[in-house]
Image (cartoon, rainbow, N blue to C red; front, side, top):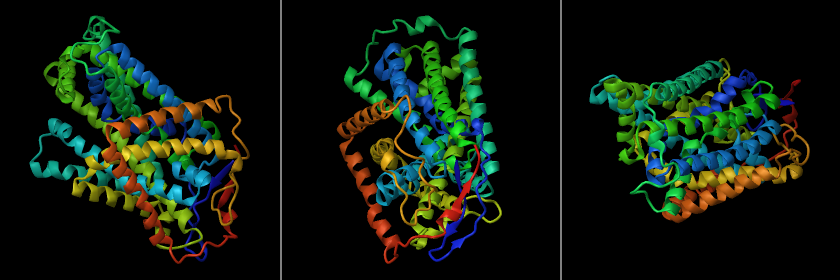
Length: 482
């Protein structure tokens, strides 16, 4: 097994940087998989899906269908992460399978467009729930999203261990809280099977079946989103050959169970006929379970879930910027080189953390996060599909002159699920991309254009630099025993 060291190049010589410590175990890595997937959407998406589908059976079928697609994708990402157990995730996988340009486009989209928009959106979404718990003046409420981003940035700047332990604790706590919420709904008698009947028949007022299923599938994908984040922090996972498969498969199983249980608990407490809007539905659910205190209890649950997701984002995404900077600057130098260095004392990708925090604050200031999310989801689906495609090219991945990655783990994929899992994931991703194009063609194409704008940006960053072999590249590889 190989572990990437933390050396970074300045275009002339290799600067010795503190090496990454592999300190994340199974619980922490699994918390990364579940952390972002179970966030604000756990309280909003089930209500929206239930209202449009109008049938508990269809609701469960969509969740299960998405879980099958997600598990197939998780198997693909597990194989790639075990082959390349370094920080960077999809960026590194695409770099190996399709080269620097395609990988840079993903890194550009993830670090500079999509994830800052997601982080800003979640921080703004937290404000009304925080206000329901702690009344605050308008000025304090307006400053809260920026304060959260700055706090998370500081936590990640001062070291991976502290941020990892905090993230793990918050995300497993929220799983326990959600399980307790479902248990209370069932054993207190507030949830009744009668509210689920009829199981298969659609309620009056439901939307057209085809459009309802398509919309629910897109919503479920977006809500499940984030299970792939464990690949981004693979360089900090202990014994990745053992830990990553457990984290991906176990994390997806936990997410599936939580969404199914919470969705049916919601509908068993509040009949589908009473669903008018997401916010009203959550309020009805909280009131039914906890009376007058229901709104505050549910607000606390939302805050916990969203903070867990933000912790994963703030920890994982700077690793993409870090990996991109190391790869692009390793033999070329340029302005990216500064983001491929670790802090000499804390060992964190400190400059990448500062960049990520700064871009998220800029997006927050501009108020463009809602549009960013609408525009970029199509491109995100395409990149996930391309990442799975790299498995079909695994046997052709060869080391390149000056390549700063460790040698690829040899040859084609040999696993019981191959090639079925990547095919299932590609079919599902293709169907989602087609639905997005048909339903929202303009935002999808604008998002694709924004992603392609990364090509001239890359040219500006690396122009005039010559790519020469790096004879010291092997010094960045630390051999560890399994």
